[in-house]
Length: 199
Image (cartoon, rainbow, N blue to C red; front, side, top):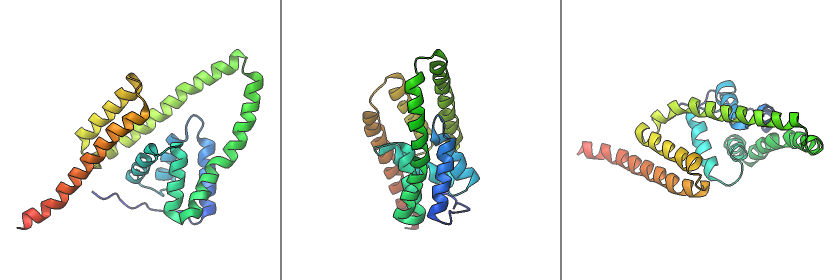
């Protein structure tokens, strides 16, 4: 099934820059959870299916997922100018904030209140990521691989990374190539089906 078209698009690279700056400033504990809400639900620049596809590619590329996504989304709308505008929005102001907070952390890291606050933020980050994952799960029904296979692959990935603590590169190489192969087989079978019925 083809994903529905998004209902809006940015009007300029400057709007992309502002949107990704605002997105980055909301992303305490992880931008990914906020990105799905802002880009799909508020701005409506992407459908959830498109967001999942871009996220899947960003996951297997080196570097931070959200930076990879910013580059791809910017490029999607305005080519290289959009890619740089989105990435600059994602990085510029947060870089200033991080430098200031790093200086403050270096000075106050020994305080029990500071270390306790940071541990509390870890729980919030985990909750944001889990919430985003649950929100995106219904989109697996439209995946060409099929819901049962997607569920098995997701559980295997969780077990390998979270429980067995296998290297992420190895997990992506094995499970990612398996998922791509399954999708390729299903797509080939779907293309052959009409020609068989027409005979």
